[in-house]
Image (cartoon, rainbow, N blue to C red; front, side, top):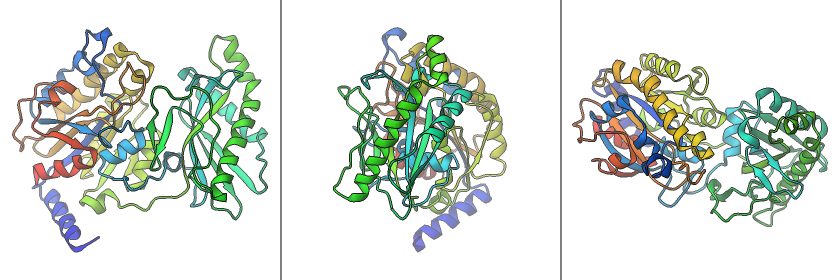
Length: 440
Protein backbone atom coordinates (compact mmCIF):
# COMPACT_ATOMS: atom_id res chain seq x y z
CA UNK A 1 0.00 0.00 0.00
CA UNK A 2 1.42 3.43 -0.94
CA UNK A 3 1.07 6.67 1.03
CA UNK A 4 -1.80 8.00 -1.12
CA UNK A 5 -3.82 4.80 -0.64
CA UNK A 6 -3.19 4.94 3.09
CA UNK A 7 -4.39 8.54 3.33
CA UNK A 8 -7.50 7.71 1.25
CA UNK A 9 -8.39 4.79 3.53
CA UNK A 10 -7.97 6.92 6.65
CA UNK A 11 -10.17 9.68 5.21
CA UNK A 12 -12.87 7.20 4.16
CA UNK A 13 -12.87 5.57 7.59
CA UNK A 14 -13.09 8.93 9.38
CA UNK A 15 -15.85 10.14 7.03
CA UNK A 16 -17.98 7.03 7.70
CA UNK A 17 -17.37 7.30 11.44
CA UNK A 18 -18.58 10.91 11.63
CA UNK A 19 -21.43 10.41 9.17
CA UNK A 20 -19.99 12.41 6.26
CA UNK A 21 -19.91 9.33 4.07
CA UNK A 22 -22.82 6.93 3.76
CA UNK A 23 -22.58 3.27 4.66
CA UNK A 24 -22.91 0.83 1.76
CA UNK A 25 -25.47 -1.91 1.15
CA UNK A 26 -24.47 -3.77 -2.00
CA UNK A 27 -26.95 -6.32 -3.42
CA UNK A 28 -26.20 -8.59 -6.38
CA UNK A 29 -29.10 -10.51 -7.92
CA UNK A 30 -27.46 -13.58 -9.40
CA UNK A 31 -28.12 -13.90 -13.13
CA UNK A 32 -31.05 -11.46 -13.10
CA UNK A 33 -30.17 -9.92 -16.47
CA UNK A 34 -31.91 -11.33 -19.53
CA UNK A 35 -33.04 -10.71 -23.09
CA UNK A 36 -36.56 -10.05 -24.48
CA UNK A 37 -38.43 -13.34 -24.27
CA UNK A 38 -41.31 -14.48 -26.52
CA UNK A 39 -43.15 -16.09 -23.57
CA UNK A 40 -43.23 -12.67 -21.87
CA UNK A 41 -44.50 -10.69 -24.85
CA UNK A 42 -40.92 -9.98 -25.91
CA UNK A 43 -39.77 -8.18 -22.79
CA UNK A 44 -37.27 -9.38 -20.19
CA UNK A 45 -38.27 -11.02 -16.89
CA UNK A 46 -37.26 -7.82 -15.06
CA UNK A 47 -39.44 -5.76 -17.39
CA UNK A 48 -42.38 -8.16 -17.09
CA UNK A 49 -42.18 -8.52 -13.31
CA UNK A 50 -44.35 -6.48 -10.93
CA UNK A 51 -41.68 -4.86 -8.75
CA UNK A 52 -43.15 -1.82 -6.98
CA UNK A 53 -40.42 -1.73 -4.33
CA UNK A 54 -37.49 -1.95 -6.70
CA UNK A 55 -39.14 0.63 -8.91
CA UNK A 56 -39.72 3.02 -6.02
CA UNK A 57 -36.01 2.80 -5.24
CA UNK A 58 -35.15 3.33 -8.90
CA UNK A 59 -37.06 6.59 -8.92
CA UNK A 60 -34.83 7.86 -6.10
CA UNK A 61 -31.53 6.84 -7.67
CA UNK A 62 -29.22 6.85 -10.65
CA UNK A 63 -28.90 3.99 -13.13
CA UNK A 64 -26.59 2.53 -15.71
CA UNK A 65 -25.39 -0.69 -17.27
CA UNK A 66 -22.43 -2.86 -16.29
CA UNK A 67 -20.27 -5.36 -18.14
CA UNK A 68 -19.25 -7.32 -15.08
CA UNK A 69 -15.94 -8.62 -16.44
CA UNK A 70 -15.73 -7.01 -19.85
CA UNK A 71 -17.53 -6.57 -23.13
CA UNK A 72 -17.63 -9.80 -25.11
CA UNK A 73 -16.95 -12.01 -22.06
CA UNK A 74 -19.63 -14.43 -20.84
CA UNK A 75 -18.30 -14.97 -17.32
CA UNK A 76 -18.78 -17.59 -14.67
CA UNK A 77 -20.15 -16.37 -11.36
CA UNK A 78 -16.83 -16.35 -9.48
CA UNK A 79 -14.87 -14.01 -11.72
CA UNK A 80 -18.02 -11.91 -12.24
CA UNK A 81 -18.51 -11.40 -8.49
CA UNK A 82 -14.83 -10.62 -7.97
CA UNK A 83 -15.08 -8.00 -10.73
CA UNK A 84 -18.25 -6.46 -9.32
CA UNK A 85 -16.39 -6.14 -6.01
CA UNK A 86 -13.57 -4.22 -7.78
CA UNK A 87 -11.03 -7.03 -8.30
CA UNK A 88 -9.26 -7.13 -11.66
CA UNK A 89 -7.81 -10.50 -12.71
CA UNK A 90 -7.13 -9.57 -16.33
CA UNK A 91 -3.48 -10.59 -15.90
CA UNK A 92 -4.41 -14.10 -14.72
CA UNK A 93 -7.00 -15.76 -12.52
CA UNK A 94 -6.71 -18.31 -9.69
CA UNK A 95 -9.42 -20.73 -10.85
CA UNK A 96 -12.86 -21.31 -9.41
CA UNK A 97 -11.84 -24.64 -7.91
CA UNK A 98 -9.65 -22.88 -5.34
CA UNK A 99 -12.35 -20.35 -4.46
CA UNK A 100 -14.94 -23.07 -3.85
CA UNK A 101 -12.55 -25.28 -1.89
CA UNK A 102 -11.79 -22.37 0.44
CA UNK A 103 -15.48 -21.47 0.67
CA UNK A 104 -16.37 -25.05 1.58
CA UNK A 105 -13.67 -25.22 4.28
CA UNK A 106 -11.63 -27.93 2.56
CA UNK A 107 -7.94 -28.44 3.25
CA UNK A 108 -6.23 -26.60 0.40
CA UNK A 109 -2.61 -25.53 0.14
CA UNK A 110 -0.36 -24.19 -2.60
CA UNK A 111 0.58 -27.06 -4.90
CA UNK A 112 -2.69 -28.93 -4.42
CA UNK A 113 -5.13 -28.97 -7.34
CA UNK A 114 -8.78 -27.97 -6.86
CA UNK A 115 -11.60 -28.21 -9.41
CA UNK A 116 -15.30 -27.37 -9.34
CA UNK A 117 -17.53 -30.28 -10.32
CA UNK A 118 -21.09 -31.07 -11.32
CA UNK A 119 -22.87 -34.36 -10.81
CA UNK A 120 -24.15 -34.97 -14.34
CA UNK A 121 -26.05 -37.48 -16.46
CA UNK A 122 -24.28 -39.16 -19.40
CA UNK A 123 -25.15 -42.06 -21.69
CA UNK A 124 -23.00 -45.11 -22.51
CA UNK A 125 -21.16 -43.09 -25.18
CA UNK A 126 -20.26 -40.31 -22.70
CA UNK A 127 -22.80 -37.98 -24.33
CA UNK A 128 -23.99 -35.43 -21.77
CA UNK A 129 -27.73 -35.69 -21.30
CA UNK A 130 -27.92 -33.19 -18.42
CA UNK A 131 -25.03 -31.19 -16.94
CA UNK A 132 -26.84 -31.04 -13.59
CA UNK A 133 -28.46 -34.49 -13.40
CA UNK A 134 -31.97 -33.06 -13.39
CA UNK A 135 -31.09 -30.37 -10.84
CA UNK A 136 -32.97 -32.42 -8.24
CA UNK A 137 -30.23 -34.26 -6.32
CA UNK A 138 -30.99 -34.22 -2.60
CA UNK A 139 -28.33 -33.64 0.06
CA UNK A 140 -28.75 -37.24 1.21
CA UNK A 141 -28.24 -38.61 -2.30
CA UNK A 142 -25.16 -36.45 -2.88
CA UNK A 143 -23.61 -37.51 0.42
CA UNK A 144 -24.15 -41.21 -0.31
CA UNK A 145 -22.66 -40.88 -3.80
CA UNK A 146 -19.71 -38.96 -2.41
CA UNK A 147 -19.03 -41.61 0.21
CA UNK A 148 -19.01 -44.30 -2.49
CA UNK A 149 -16.55 -42.28 -4.55
CA UNK A 150 -14.20 -41.71 -1.61
CA UNK A 151 -14.37 -45.37 -0.61
CA UNK A 152 -14.05 -47.00 -4.02
CA UNK A 153 -11.95 -44.68 -6.20
CA UNK A 154 -8.22 -45.27 -5.81
CA UNK A 155 -5.90 -43.15 -7.95
CA UNK A 156 -3.30 -45.04 -9.97
CA UNK A 157 -0.41 -42.62 -9.45
CA UNK A 158 1.80 -43.49 -6.48
CA UNK A 159 1.49 -40.96 -3.66
CA UNK A 160 -1.63 -39.35 -5.14
CA UNK A 161 -4.82 -38.84 -3.15
CA UNK A 162 -7.96 -36.73 -3.34
CA UNK A 163 -10.67 -35.21 -1.21
CA UNK A 164 -14.18 -34.99 -2.60
CA UNK A 165 -17.02 -32.89 -1.20
CA UNK A 166 -20.62 -32.45 -2.37
CA UNK A 167 -21.84 -28.94 -1.57
CA UNK A 168 -25.31 -27.80 -2.72
CA UNK A 169 -27.48 -29.82 -5.10
CA UNK A 170 -25.49 -31.01 -8.10
CA UNK A 171 -22.40 -29.03 -7.10
CA UNK A 172 -19.21 -30.64 -5.79
CA UNK A 173 -15.47 -30.02 -5.37
CA UNK A 174 -12.44 -32.27 -5.74
CA UNK A 175 -8.94 -31.52 -4.43
CA UNK A 176 -5.96 -33.61 -5.56
CA UNK A 177 -2.56 -33.80 -3.93
CA UNK A 178 0.61 -35.74 -4.64
CA UNK A 179 3.34 -36.12 -2.05
CA UNK A 180 6.32 -33.91 -2.89
CA UNK A 181 4.80 -32.52 -6.09
CA UNK A 182 3.35 -29.10 -6.92
CA UNK A 183 0.52 -29.84 -9.27
CA UNK A 184 -0.20 -27.54 -12.21
CA UNK A 185 -3.55 -25.89 -12.90
CA UNK A 186 -2.72 -25.42 -16.58
CA UNK A 187 -5.12 -28.10 -17.77
CA UNK A 188 -8.36 -28.19 -19.73
CA UNK A 189 -11.87 -28.83 -18.41
CA UNK A 190 -13.74 -32.09 -18.80
CA UNK A 191 -16.96 -30.02 -18.82
CA UNK A 192 -17.27 -28.84 -22.43
CA UNK A 193 -19.72 -26.05 -21.56
CA UNK A 194 -16.85 -23.95 -20.17
CA UNK A 195 -13.49 -23.01 -21.61
CA UNK A 196 -10.57 -21.32 -19.89
CA UNK A 197 -9.35 -17.80 -20.59
CA UNK A 198 -6.40 -16.63 -18.51
CA UNK A 199 -7.38 -19.07 -15.79
CA UNK A 200 -11.01 -17.95 -15.60
CA UNK A 201 -13.99 -19.90 -16.84
CA UNK A 202 -16.03 -18.52 -19.72
CA UNK A 203 -19.07 -19.95 -21.44
CA UNK A 204 -18.26 -21.99 -24.55
CA UNK A 205 -19.71 -21.14 -27.93
CA UNK A 206 -23.01 -22.84 -28.76
CA UNK A 207 -21.39 -25.43 -31.03
CA UNK A 208 -19.15 -26.91 -28.33
CA UNK A 209 -18.80 -30.73 -28.03
CA UNK A 210 -21.67 -32.25 -26.07
CA UNK A 211 -19.75 -35.20 -24.63
CA UNK A 212 -17.57 -35.59 -21.56
CA UNK A 213 -14.08 -34.43 -22.52
CA UNK A 214 -10.66 -35.79 -21.68
CA UNK A 215 -8.56 -33.42 -19.59
CA UNK A 216 -5.45 -32.32 -21.47
CA UNK A 217 -2.32 -30.45 -20.33
CA UNK A 218 -2.10 -26.94 -21.76
CA UNK A 219 1.70 -26.94 -21.72
CA UNK A 220 4.48 -29.52 -21.99
CA UNK A 221 5.41 -29.48 -18.31
CA UNK A 222 5.47 -32.76 -16.40
CA UNK A 223 3.33 -31.25 -13.64
CA UNK A 224 0.58 -30.33 -16.12
CA UNK A 225 0.73 -33.80 -17.65
CA UNK A 226 0.40 -35.34 -14.18
CA UNK A 227 -2.53 -33.08 -13.25
CA UNK A 228 -4.41 -34.02 -16.44
CA UNK A 229 -3.69 -37.70 -15.83
CA UNK A 230 -5.07 -37.48 -12.27
CA UNK A 231 -8.27 -35.81 -13.48
CA UNK A 232 -8.85 -38.41 -16.18
CA UNK A 233 -8.09 -41.30 -13.83
CA UNK A 234 -10.54 -39.92 -11.29
CA UNK A 235 -13.25 -39.21 -13.89
CA UNK A 236 -13.07 -42.67 -15.46
CA UNK A 237 -13.21 -44.47 -12.13
CA UNK A 238 -16.06 -42.29 -10.84
CA UNK A 239 -18.20 -43.32 -13.83
CA UNK A 240 -17.66 -46.98 -13.00
CA UNK A 241 -18.58 -46.43 -9.33
CA UNK A 242 -21.70 -44.38 -10.06
CA UNK A 243 -23.06 -46.48 -12.93
CA UNK A 244 -24.67 -49.15 -10.77
CA UNK A 245 -24.90 -47.29 -7.47
CA UNK A 246 -28.23 -47.98 -5.68
CA UNK A 247 -29.01 -44.25 -5.57
CA UNK A 248 -28.84 -44.05 -9.35
CA UNK A 249 -30.77 -47.27 -9.89
CA UNK A 250 -33.48 -45.84 -7.66
CA UNK A 251 -33.46 -42.51 -9.50
CA UNK A 252 -33.88 -44.26 -12.86
CA UNK A 253 -36.75 -46.36 -11.49
CA UNK A 254 -38.44 -43.14 -10.30
CA UNK A 255 -38.06 -41.55 -13.73
CA UNK A 256 -35.22 -39.25 -12.64
CA UNK A 257 -31.87 -38.73 -14.32
CA UNK A 258 -29.00 -40.64 -12.74
CA UNK A 259 -25.99 -38.76 -11.36
CA UNK A 260 -23.57 -41.07 -13.13
CA UNK A 261 -20.62 -38.79 -13.94
CA UNK A 262 -18.82 -35.72 -12.70
CA UNK A 263 -17.93 -32.81 -14.97
CA UNK A 264 -14.83 -30.93 -13.80
CA UNK A 265 -13.67 -27.41 -14.59
CA UNK A 266 -11.69 -24.34 -13.53
CA UNK A 267 -8.60 -25.87 -11.95
CA UNK A 268 -6.52 -23.88 -9.49
CA UNK A 269 -3.36 -24.62 -7.54
CA UNK A 270 -2.59 -21.57 -5.41
CA UNK A 271 -4.20 -19.46 -2.72
CA UNK A 272 -4.22 -15.92 -4.11
CA UNK A 273 -2.62 -13.04 -2.27
CA UNK A 274 -4.98 -10.14 -2.84
CA UNK A 275 -5.79 -7.02 -0.79
CA UNK A 276 -8.90 -7.01 1.35
CA UNK A 277 -11.75 -4.62 0.69
CA UNK A 278 -10.69 -2.75 3.81
CA UNK A 279 -7.17 -2.34 2.44
CA UNK A 280 -8.60 -1.09 -0.86
CA UNK A 281 -11.29 1.26 0.44
CA UNK A 282 -11.06 1.55 4.21
CA UNK A 283 -14.53 0.02 4.53
CA UNK A 284 -15.25 -2.82 6.94
CA UNK A 285 -17.48 -5.19 4.95
CA UNK A 286 -19.49 -8.23 5.92
CA UNK A 287 -21.28 -10.61 3.58
CA UNK A 288 -24.54 -12.59 3.39
CA UNK A 289 -23.99 -15.55 1.08
CA UNK A 290 -25.07 -19.18 0.67
CA UNK A 291 -22.87 -21.10 -1.76
CA UNK A 292 -19.18 -22.02 -1.45
CA UNK A 293 -18.16 -19.82 -4.37
CA UNK A 294 -19.56 -16.65 -2.77
CA UNK A 295 -18.30 -17.66 0.68
CA UNK A 296 -14.84 -18.35 -0.76
CA UNK A 297 -14.72 -14.94 -2.42
CA UNK A 298 -15.76 -13.29 0.84
CA UNK A 299 -13.04 -15.05 2.81
CA UNK A 300 -10.36 -14.23 0.25
CA UNK A 301 -11.14 -10.49 0.33
CA UNK A 302 -11.54 -10.24 4.09
CA UNK A 303 -15.30 -10.19 4.54
CA UNK A 304 -16.93 -11.85 7.51
CA UNK A 305 -19.57 -14.30 6.26
CA UNK A 306 -23.03 -14.44 7.82
CA UNK A 307 -25.65 -17.09 7.04
CA UNK A 308 -29.25 -15.91 6.87
CA UNK A 309 -31.58 -18.85 6.29
CA UNK A 310 -31.83 -20.80 3.06
CA UNK A 311 -31.39 -19.70 -0.54
CA UNK A 312 -34.85 -18.15 -0.74
CA UNK A 313 -35.32 -16.87 2.82
CA UNK A 314 -35.43 -13.34 1.43
CA UNK A 315 -37.16 -11.73 4.41
CA UNK A 316 -34.55 -13.12 6.80
CA UNK A 317 -31.76 -11.93 4.54
CA UNK A 318 -33.24 -8.42 4.46
CA UNK A 319 -33.64 -8.30 8.25
CA UNK A 320 -30.09 -9.57 8.70
CA UNK A 321 -28.67 -7.01 6.27
CA UNK A 322 -30.44 -4.15 8.03
CA UNK A 323 -29.14 -5.35 11.39
CA UNK A 324 -25.57 -5.76 10.10
CA UNK A 325 -25.51 -2.16 8.92
CA UNK A 326 -25.49 -1.14 12.59
CA UNK A 327 -22.08 -2.77 13.07
CA UNK A 328 -20.38 -2.63 9.66
CA UNK A 329 -19.51 0.09 7.15
CA UNK A 330 -20.58 -2.11 4.25
CA UNK A 331 -22.84 -5.13 3.77
CA UNK A 332 -22.70 -7.27 0.65
CA UNK A 333 -25.70 -9.52 -0.13
CA UNK A 334 -25.69 -12.18 -2.83
CA UNK A 335 -29.16 -13.47 -3.78
CA UNK A 336 -29.04 -16.62 -5.89
CA UNK A 337 -32.72 -16.87 -6.92
CA UNK A 338 -32.99 -15.60 -10.52
CA UNK A 339 -30.06 -17.57 -11.95
CA UNK A 340 -31.53 -21.08 -11.81
CA UNK A 341 -34.70 -20.42 -13.86
CA UNK A 342 -32.43 -18.66 -16.34
CA UNK A 343 -30.38 -21.85 -16.72
CA UNK A 344 -33.62 -23.85 -16.93
CA UNK A 345 -34.97 -21.62 -19.69
CA UNK A 346 -38.07 -20.76 -17.65
CA UNK A 347 -38.77 -17.06 -18.16
CA UNK A 348 -42.09 -17.12 -16.32
CA UNK A 349 -40.48 -18.70 -13.26
CA UNK A 350 -37.65 -16.16 -13.40
CA UNK A 351 -40.26 -13.39 -13.43
CA UNK A 352 -41.97 -14.94 -10.37
CA UNK A 353 -38.66 -15.23 -8.50
CA UNK A 354 -37.91 -11.56 -9.19
CA UNK A 355 -41.38 -10.63 -7.87
CA UNK A 356 -40.78 -12.74 -4.76
CA UNK A 357 -37.48 -10.97 -4.09
CA UNK A 358 -39.18 -7.60 -4.57
CA UNK A 359 -42.01 -8.51 -2.20
CA UNK A 360 -39.96 -10.14 0.53
CA UNK A 361 -36.52 -8.50 0.32
CA UNK A 362 -36.77 -5.08 -1.28
CA UNK A 363 -40.04 -4.17 0.46
CA UNK A 364 -38.13 -4.17 3.76
CA UNK A 365 -35.28 -2.15 2.31
CA UNK A 366 -37.61 0.39 0.70
CA UNK A 367 -39.48 0.95 3.96
CA UNK A 368 -36.68 0.68 6.52
CA UNK A 369 -33.43 1.93 4.98
CA UNK A 370 -32.32 5.44 5.90
CA UNK A 371 -31.17 6.49 2.47
CA UNK A 372 -29.40 9.54 3.84
CA UNK A 373 -27.12 7.31 5.86
CA UNK A 374 -26.89 4.33 3.46
CA UNK A 375 -25.91 4.13 -0.20
CA UNK A 376 -27.80 1.22 -1.74
CA UNK A 377 -26.23 -0.45 -4.78
CA UNK A 378 -28.27 -3.01 -6.74
CA UNK A 379 -26.95 -4.94 -9.72
CA UNK A 380 -26.14 -8.44 -10.95
CA UNK A 381 -23.04 -10.54 -11.47
CA UNK A 382 -24.01 -11.49 -15.03
CA UNK A 383 -26.92 -12.02 -17.36
CA UNK A 384 -28.47 -15.51 -17.67
CA UNK A 385 -30.88 -15.28 -20.61
CA UNK A 386 -33.61 -17.92 -20.55
CA UNK A 387 -33.34 -18.44 -24.28
CA UNK A 388 -29.66 -19.33 -23.94
CA UNK A 389 -29.94 -21.29 -20.67
CA UNK A 390 -26.45 -19.99 -19.92
CA UNK A 391 -24.57 -16.87 -18.91
CA UNK A 392 -24.10 -14.29 -21.63
CA UNK A 393 -21.93 -11.24 -22.27
CA UNK A 394 -24.89 -8.84 -22.10
CA UNK A 395 -24.58 -5.91 -19.69
CA UNK A 396 -26.65 -5.94 -16.49
CA UNK A 397 -28.61 -3.09 -14.87
CA UNK A 398 -27.05 -1.03 -12.09
CA UNK A 399 -28.83 1.20 -9.59
CA UNK A 400 -27.34 3.46 -6.90
CA UNK A 401 -29.64 5.12 -4.38
CA UNK A 402 -28.84 7.77 -1.76
CA UNK A 403 -30.75 10.94 -0.99
CA UNK A 404 -27.54 12.97 -1.16
CA UNK A 405 -27.37 12.08 -4.88
CA UNK A 406 -29.69 13.81 -7.37
CA UNK A 407 -31.79 11.16 -9.11
CA UNK A 408 -31.81 10.84 -12.90
CA UNK A 409 -35.52 10.20 -13.54
CA UNK A 410 -35.08 6.45 -13.99
CA UNK A 411 -38.47 4.85 -13.40
CA UNK A 412 -37.77 1.11 -13.05
CA UNK A 413 -34.96 -1.35 -12.34
CA UNK A 414 -34.84 -2.99 -15.77
CA UNK A 415 -32.31 -3.42 -18.55
CA UNK A 416 -34.22 -0.97 -20.73
CA UNK A 417 -34.49 1.78 -18.10
CA UNK A 418 -30.90 1.33 -16.97
CA UNK A 419 -29.68 1.86 -20.55
CA UNK A 420 -30.98 5.46 -20.29
CA UNK A 421 -29.48 6.20 -16.86
CA UNK A 422 -26.91 8.87 -16.06
CA UNK A 423 -24.23 6.38 -14.98
CA UNK A 424 -23.76 5.23 -18.55
CA UNK A 425 -21.87 1.98 -19.12
CA UNK A 426 -19.34 0.78 -16.55
CA UNK A 427 -17.12 -2.22 -15.99
CA UNK A 428 -17.62 -4.25 -12.86
CA UNK A 429 -14.32 -3.11 -11.34
CA UNK A 430 -15.54 0.50 -11.59
CA UNK A 431 -18.76 0.09 -9.59
CA UNK A 432 -17.48 0.52 -6.03
CA UNK A 433 -15.09 3.37 -6.87
CA UNK A 434 -17.93 5.12 -8.71
CA UNK A 435 -20.26 4.65 -5.74
CA UNK A 436 -17.75 6.14 -3.33
CA UNK A 437 -17.13 9.08 -5.67
CA UNK A 438 -20.85 9.92 -5.67
CA UNK A 439 -21.03 10.27 -1.89
CA UNK A 440 -17.55 11.56 -1.07
